[in-house]
Image (cartoon, rainbow, N blue to C red; front, side):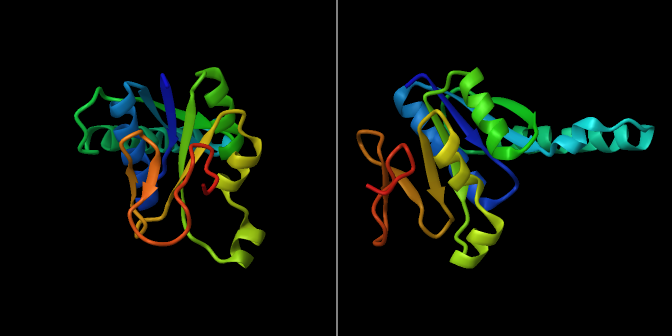
Length: 169
């Protein structure tokens, strides 16, 4: 494994996904790339006010990525960061292909069946459409720990550990 891409936002589960990615990257000697996706509409502004709003969104995203990069408590090399634009799952898939990553890591919040059906899930969409293996990190409360071989293990009873493609194993 040479490259890992992890999609993050401002949620706790994104921090956990970043921690897992950085720990795994350090163990296997892989370069980690933290990405945050802004909606495409933010990149399409034409007025001065909208351009200022776009810059503020970009600054926020870069600040979030810098904070995660510097405050994750790992000893490995600093990860690369990138702000992407577009529909999140599509932008992440495109970046994963362009960067030729070996693994995409994303966090997911626990939601009920109805909410997941109505709102969808970016993690679900990535599992269906991403050409690269996807690891889904569960919401805090089910911490993911990496086993000796670098496989994701769940420290608490419950569903089976996650395989690198995000499928319970």
